[in-house]
Length: 85
Image (cartoon, rainbow, N blue to C red; front, side, top):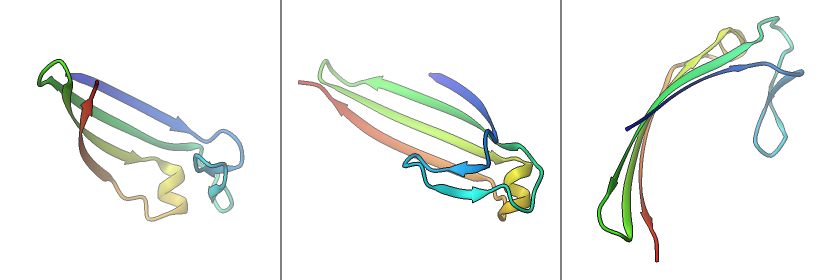
């Protein structure tokens, strides 16, 4: 069982996507704190070729997202099967 927690702060002039495009600018807010999340992940080795992974993440929006968007909490559950040959 793995646990993780991360906090995100505004670095430049807005919130950017992985591709580099701006998602939300800092216009209209002076807040710098974007978000935090807590996650837990379970891994079960089924056999020497297959591992099942399950992860739950809860996203806590910070002041930046509360002031520039609706600022909703998000719950995320995912599972995947890792096959190795």
